[in-house]
Length: 292
Image (cartoon, rainbow, N blue to C red):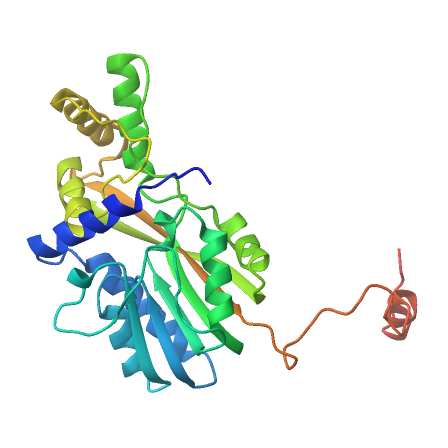
């Protein structure tokens, strides 16, 4: 499989961000973790064995423990440096080295969008879940950083007559449910939540992305540093097109939420074609309505 992302570079970017320790650099992850807690609160069952998969910080695990619905929580990360005063399991990126049917709940927050083989990762998650186990995941969707993507594209086209990939491609919510189905999940659901953050300038947004460890890890990224005039012009275009009345600019983060269950005999299933016991015309007639 051709690699879209450089997994080794991604780990190094996350470690660099952790070492820098920027204030509130994890604001987006904390927000998504809070949303995880709200979604879990609507599920009417408990989960004795859970795991957080490449969630980058302890936020997801903390939410699970505080929910009152989860027993043991195992944490998987790609590097030991990501565990700060905590224990967990080190796993190669895009792998789930856990026994089959060993989990009741698996959670992934803001990591799937940087994986080269999302269907393969989801298949591994489904195999690790016990029958009727639940997967909850959040990843950046196609609307994420749309303003920044456009500003950089227009600036580079204007200055050099072409454009290089600088913002990662993100999944469309319309495709997300299909990814769950391909991985063998039952009752797949995909929906979105849009988070808008306002900044004084494009450079402040880029500082936050660096502090999150979310700068480009595209395998096809330009290897030479971009000239300063590219970013200066992009910042001008960003402000020209998107600045609000007070001069601040918005940045969009579209979060795609995924949920799916490991198949179990107790789950609702659609009827087989031709298995109906009554004709539609008979049902409509009994209801006093005409077919047509």
